[in-house]
Image (cartoon, rainbow, N blue to C red; front, top):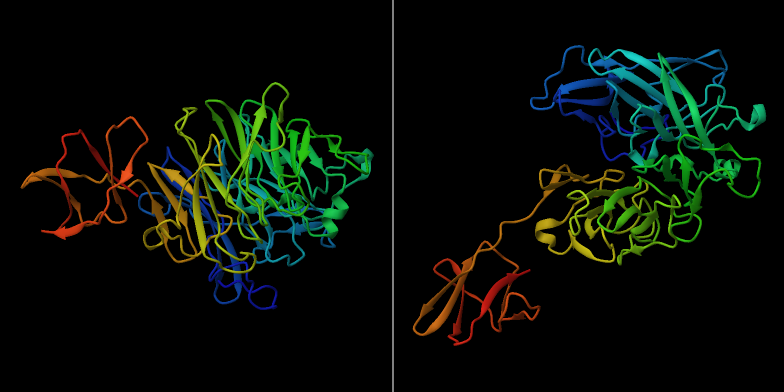
Length: 488
């Protein structure tokens, strides 16, 4: 299925065909992967289906697939009931598996109305729909997309998400939960119902709506060991809220006095948060990381667990800015627990231009999570081997089994990992030292030092020659103890 939008031609936020748009979710115990597939059948019928597949073989599990359908009471489309539209509702945010249910969310296909924000829960075994929620039943829009991130969940199975441009209810002493566009939401399931049990809407929601600055462009991070939720949107302002008492809609017309903290990562309005913050409890403290759009940097914020707020300004920031445009850096983090020196922030972004309705080349970067001013590696350092290809926006790197997996718009999945350590052989010939290594180990410089403990490594002058299928360097013998290494 192509990205045509309401008869208005190609929709440029899709690269090529549509099918599986969102990130699937895996049950590692059952070995099942769940995904939503969008298709056009018999040339005219638009269908969305939930599939449950054996992750090892790709075979359908029992009861799979199931056609996604739903209705919800409301007058937002002129009648008394809203029917889920599989053509107009775009399933972008990642799936969530919690409490034996697979949760799926929807926003719009190219802002083509009428549409709404939908959330549905399906039994992970029977694939029967057991819960449904609509963000704007008596209004419009309010899509759930969050830059591709999925809903978050606490240990009790409560769901947390943010909504985009849409109708905002202000009646009933500013506590109206019927229409909740431009909001953070906590949803609690009771039977087939998903009810709002806590929520936050910025005081300037009307301006966000009028200027297309969705609050819901960023995913929500639940800060470990706290009752706090952290997210932001297209305005560039990020918010720290008490997730169990978010404050609703303030009566103030000038400030959000109902939340814990807010700030602009870039210092100015308009640098959008797309994707989501990531978190690490490290050896020397707790940190949040985010990378907003525009010409800006990866930023690291230290969290003060005594005050329950972030120390400002940022603790550190990366040294390389992403190009002007969207989406900024899409982040993941890996670490060996809290062990010092083990944390790495992985960031993918466009290499040049803007990826808004355009396909751009990409780059993958790795930063020291203890202080992100230290970039460890990036994919442009050895382009012939590591170049990303075309950037797949809103798709974070995945880290597993000692490898980093990065999807691309170049019809391939990139897999990055540590290369085998190059082996040196040192021998004697005619009173000289002969150092050799395999010719398939390229891009290295031979270095020498008098001690393994000091930092005084220096390049060995001259170059290597190929002899008998090996790189070879011949050096005068020395009475001193010398060490040699290959350094990229």
